[in-house]
Amino acid sequence: MAEDFDVRLTEKHYMPDPSYKQNSWVGDYATAYQDFLKDPERFWDTIAQELHWFSPYRKVKEWNYPYARWFIDGKTNITYNCLDRHMQNSRRNKVALIWRGEDDTERIYTYRQLYREVMRVANGLKKLGVGKGDRVCIYMPMVPEQIVSMLACARIGAVHSVVFGGFGAAALNSRITGAGAKVVITADVTFRRGKSIPLKHIIEEAIINAETVEHIVVLRREQHQPVEIHREMEVDFYDMIRGAGADCESEVMDAEDPLFILYTSGSTGAPKGIVHTCGGYMVGTYYTTKNVFDIKDTDVYWCTADPGWITGHSYVVYGPLSVGATIIMTESTPDFPDPGVYWRMVEEFGVTILYTAPTAIRMFMKLGEEWPGKYNLSTLRILGSVGEPLNPEAFEWYYRVIGKGRCPVVDTWWQTETGMHMVTTLIGEPMYPGFAGKAVPGVVADVVDKDGNSVPPGTGGFLVIREPWPSMLRTVYKDDDRYRKYWTTIPGCYAVGDLAVRNREGYIMVLGRADDLIVVAGHNIGTAEVESALVSHQAVAEAAVIGKPDPVKGNVIKAFVILRVGHIPSERLKNELLYHVRITLGPIAMPSEIEFVQSLPKTRSGKIMRRVLKAQELGMDPGDISTLEE
Image 1: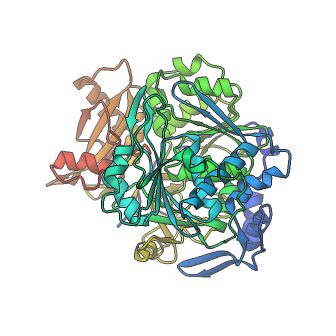
Image 2 (image 1 turned 60 degrees about the horizontal axis):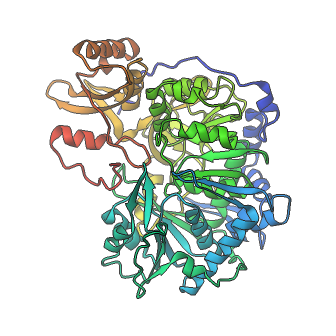
Image 3 (image 1 turned 90 degrees about the vertical axis):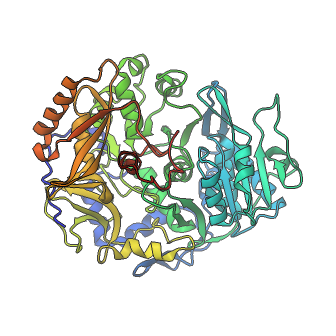
């Protein structure tokens, strides 16, 4: 396979105000990265020493390819570092969590209040017979009890498996049975766009033939008409903790004990149970939260992700709480009751760091500048992006309209499997639209050919990680062969499954999944590149492209396009878009067909499911669509 994608690399970049670098935790990126390379184990040891260990580790790392162990024989508990540690300093009465409901209801927890609530729920779970090593499935909406339940499990050494509250019964059943959950924690309803959506009946269907489940804990939110509790198996959330003491010592966990299992979204095949461990994951998420977002004690931090995904685990719950941040959480969707809801919250709460997805940014772009323009966003100092590549046009809009041309944009590349940020542009460094950035200090990333050889700038290849890192997955639950495949697909490397290219400055642009490659007349075309070209046209809000079999060219490109408000589908506009792609990328990348659509199939985390489009186009079975957003 030829990996030369003939990518056109822009030299355009933005420089943050020098004060960002001067005041950042990292300082100069090049210096920090060289310090890491000089002595990687000392680098990670220094970070780990900032956290509490009940017993010190005797060695930083053991690496027996493809298996790594970190912080050998160290004993800790991640909740001690997220909660107890802050009881002993000025953060005791600092606000830890601000929750906003769809109806504008607010709930606020200080670190002391969160600490006590976690211990009560931990004791409640103990009453149900949950102990170290037991698996607990958490299937809840974005409410404070979701975070409390995660922390309570970790407190007593139970392994949580959080399932996004939008999944249906079949997907939920596969995750409950896959993990062998002893207890399931859920809610009666979630609220979405002003409607009450039942959850409990989904659980009731999902636990059929789930023989390991002994109890279902139900958070009853609709007090005016409470859902019935079947006492033989079910227990009310607050009945469970009634009378439970607010004192629960944290279980002493080995650094390599499992912390959680998280099933991947399935957008690249059957869901995999990714296993993360207590010590390495704790160190990796603490380090990246502090340094990538440059979090200070005065910051108000808002990551819009659901804890049902890895972003929510690492950068809503464990990372921010370990650094003692004030975090925002909401059940609201970004366009209900109107498209100003997020910007109103930024203004009201004085949000300083906003971390959201390119899908949301492009949705806001589509709706125009009017909505954010109504609100005072001057408290924002750092913007982040996560979930998929941030195309240059979305970067420009985010930087200009939301950040007013003054906030650094950290476009983060990482995965469920990596646990923490791997590639980004650290605070104060030049920002190249479309390029995530460079490997964070602590990570060795490269762009290689199929044999693992580095490729030169401007040449596309496979993104890989060359050395182990603390928060790496340890295995795929009950399927270690799938784990080994990550390390054996490309010799000597962890293969992430993404295509990428570097510019001359060493910045990495992620082009899309390796399986999102379209070969047209012998030329490799990355879907992300064509989609980015289409979205750079003023009429286009979102685009997805697929390859269709062609007897002459092997494949041709078909594009599905959502237009911005105020633009109407027409043959003239189709021709404009074809010409625009021709000029932007060249004739080889021109779609042979453009279809205007109102929506695109996406996972609930916002990733476009191109295989669903392709299956529909070719009359094929789309496969696992349990993660498809309605």
